[in-house]
Image (cartoon, rainbow, N blue to C red; front, side):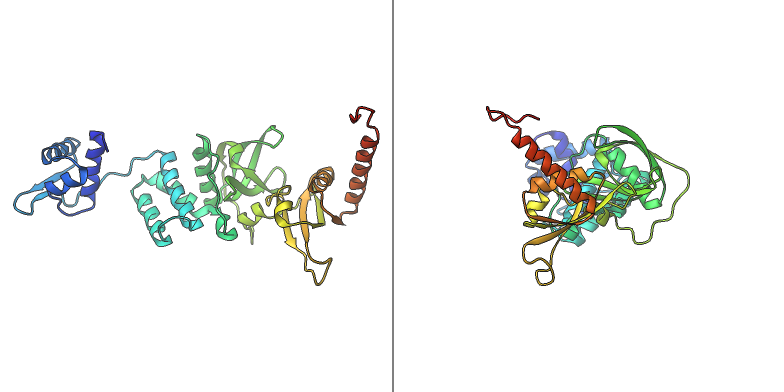
Length: 341
């Protein structure tokens, strides 16, 4: 606290803790002389903060009785950053403080925020879920940009209040689109934030990355929450059903980490096969829904592990066709060893 302003604020913080603080005590804690402490007190009084002075052997300074500090002056982004840090600490159990202390600190911060901002932060606390509590791992820092708070706050509010929203969305292919969604919840998973909800235009449950969302706008009316909907399961489990998706089930003989290196949790469920009842030890059953079977075939080729296609039968034809193309390309190599496409 080399700057005088920082020390003045430090004096205020000490006084807010309650009780009477002697000049000697304040001087010692701030590493300044007593004359400087008195000057800091005058600075606070110049800011219309009522600091009472008491004389005598046990005299000192204290805030005037019944004085209440004004609402905590934080921007939306700053308030979200503070509460978010507490949420990550509490939900992941990675912080140094017990869960009760984390919840208490978050509640105190929310109480001193301006009413509207406190409501929006409350929506984040109530609606955002973390996959860490179910998986036992830890999420990294969300790759947020300057506009993330302006997206998260209204979406969390809409999910809590069951209000439909519309927003601009950039697809994986980089195409801009406008979506109308009934938001179910927000999930923090593996360093990213995801919105789950019912896409009205496509009439299907969808998952959206928050860093691809812009221009959130509330729509009129409310909607009923679907029975048994679980935002976390929607994000970490297989993709939601859709007429445009192929249901795929494949047995792969590989370890879990190797499969996950090519097929992330957001795309497929991976479960060990019972060695007593099925193929034997070391097999995994991978279930997913994919728009293109060609992508599934290419992914299986990249895994370079034994696999058995359970369904659909059409995937076998696609894999066979891919194998033939690779063999043809290899046989077409010229004398220099270059492959002729």
